[in-house]
Image (tube, rainbow, N blue to C red; front, side):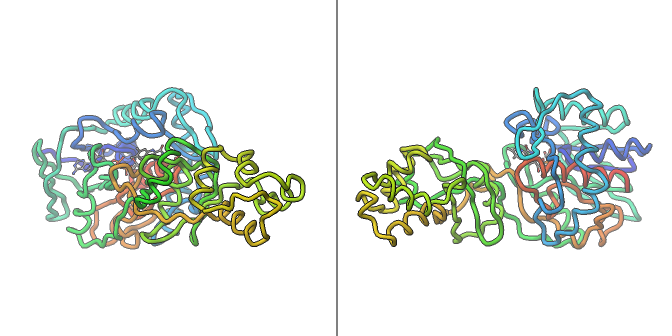
Length: 393
Ligand code: FDA
């Protein structure tokens, strides 16, 4: 049996950060993962360039049943602390948009950096090791794995969520939480494309690949970013963002003309170009194909502007500024970037990430009920929660 001070389950973003931080304090640390590669999600993130943090990270960018929980960790290990580590390793980076920081070259740089931080501090990262079961006796944890048994004083659960099972996601973290009495806030896919009902899917099929700057809103949130029509439904950052705030059966309002006042624009056009039609007016602002499809879908009148009543003008303007779209569902965990919900944070210390129910048991990263917006926030949560845990074990 291998005995260590701290055993971390999961060599993803949070687990590697925690392992390196704890080992720097002189503790014996092993980080286990069943995958054959560490940080698989980091490697494919941000289109292979890893959107590793966001300059404007603040607690408002996170969803949780307890929105206060993330505050302490985010303030103790900030986005700038992570940028300092990236700089220390001479990894070139840039801001893409909206404060999102990406590697110039490759996400591999981030995984290499975390592995170096682990090895130089003396934390061992052991891959291809599946954890079967955990027992707690006389103040120690006994962990059975495919590579033998481990015992430890501190057990850190960094198993992530359910998104992208192909990359090794499992419900193990939630099960372990439940084994030790924790409640799990119901989980669902977040930052995920919407699927559409058959009639809508057919109507918009020919727009597959067309993107447009929009504001997507519901009662709880509003995001101004790009929307993308796909062959199955709607994607792009605006849709991914609002998906995290969406419940089945609800409608999302999409403003397709966020830079214009559609009503004023139509009234002006009616006075100045009375012989024009709606499609030609809006084709100046949106891809023509898209306007044609929207016109057909929204049953816009085909008359000249001069012949449109005020009610008709208002209806079309409203159609473009609050286009109501009712998704059929989402693409689910197969393509979701994150899992919303997870280990109930009210049963975990926000200062240390230690269970309030079970001494020596810690939860970090996505397995907790803390979910960031799109834009580098989820990795920042992994770094911040991993770091405070590494400092506390
Ligand atoms: P993470 O999932 O990284 O790690 C968990 C680890 O536990 C995995 O290595 C897994 O193999 C291991 N594991 C699970 N069960 C186990 C078991 N039973 N035994 C042993 N090991 C086990 N975020 C962001 O901020 N910027 C971005 O650019 C992106 N991009 C992105 C793209 C895609 C396609 C996805 C799917 C996700 C993103 N994200 C993102 C989200 C981000 O990847 C995610 O929030 C973090 O990786 C979460 O870090 P964790 O360490 O908590 O889990």
